[in-house]
Image 1 (spheres, rainbow, N blue to C red):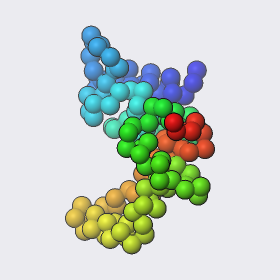
Image 2 (cartoon, rainbow, N blue to C red; image 1 turned 90 degrees about the vertical axis):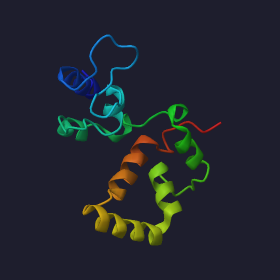
Image 3 (spheres, rainbow, N blue to C red; image 1 turned 90 degrees about the horizontal axis):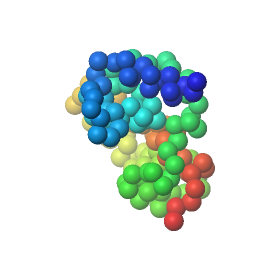
Length: 136
């Protein structure tokens, strides 16, 4: 059984999922995201299956380019050959100076890291340039 099916199976046993009748994708009531998107994106918001998610191969998380949100398609238009995915494009566009200032502000205001590096990596896995068909 594919790992994604196993993880979705865990979700179906959780008391935080949308209850029947379903009028579309089954949603998590914690954050309103569909179970299939939890598997693709970041896993359970309650961290119930993080170990399983961490073992998913990165290429299994990639979203086909024709399913990318509009903001990701727009960012892809300004990508360079050095960018692995959307995460690299965003990091390059923001630049190290602005990034350092934001990270400092975020730590001061919220008392924790902004998660920029993790988000850059996650977006590169979700929206990679190398495994996605060319944009129209």
